Image (cartoon, rainbow, N blue to C red):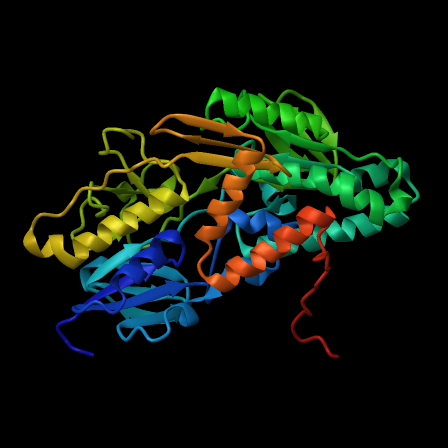
Length: 427
């Protein structure tokens, strides 16, 4: 490779990292290395559908090496970032050392348990593909256990699900569980008829979908309640011990199943000063997504905190559109504006928000022009936009097939308990 190429090292292959790499791939003057702990990109908004058996894992995942095949200036490296050495312009990965001219941190976020050890140890997270597969296995196993349980109280604990977090993920998975309970569990597990078991959605705030409008909040609350979901607002989870979810107000819900969708936090990396981090462990950046105090380190998406956008003085929301738009802006600056000395500051254009609740039930709202949709039309819009957002045609076709089948049959056929064999276990 030509020695005058600028080496851009991208940590993280999510929305921001992949979008930046795609914009710079095959462009002269750059050598791109993408690092990720997985060898595939995945689509987080549909993780819960893998977890509940509505989609195959391959429907939302795609290998980096296949995605960037034929891009001569692109390299992929499997590994995790362990330490940054800014003075030496290099990083230490779990798989070795890599040097850079520019470092772009787009590592996203991890589940935030707010320091509650019992929840971290016992709850079911919903952040990665591994989490989704583990959740599917766990819930299906507990259905099987409930089907042969003779103690009614223990059976009810196995069937009761508490979802913590009233954001889009919590709403979507609560609605999915409600539909599964009505259309699938009732048919496949006749021995569980009358066994009880409830679906709870709990949140510490006074509404579900708090980032959205009051119309969306009220519609969502009404539809979830009609579907049989019990919603508990202004209710903070404090512990998950002795097969019961404990709340700050002293109440508790006996259950073996706590789905944790209550928050995320960024990652602290060794080698960067403490003052580089702001709220939620997010890296503080300037208007060009450059890490404050550094000329050659950038941060994008969920892992960064930009307070200089006048429309978002507290920082941008941690959503996919922010990550994608920041990657677009940084790519443009790398390709042209940094060389000219006139970089373009980032400005977020809110394209709207949406959340799916269940079959033919969703909310969607757009700021300019200000519009609100609910019901079937919002549901169709959600499906269409998420389908187009998948990374390639193969993913879109397989996802559309699974959705179509589930819509007409009111069923999903991917209810497999797939366990990995422990290492060093003989056949």
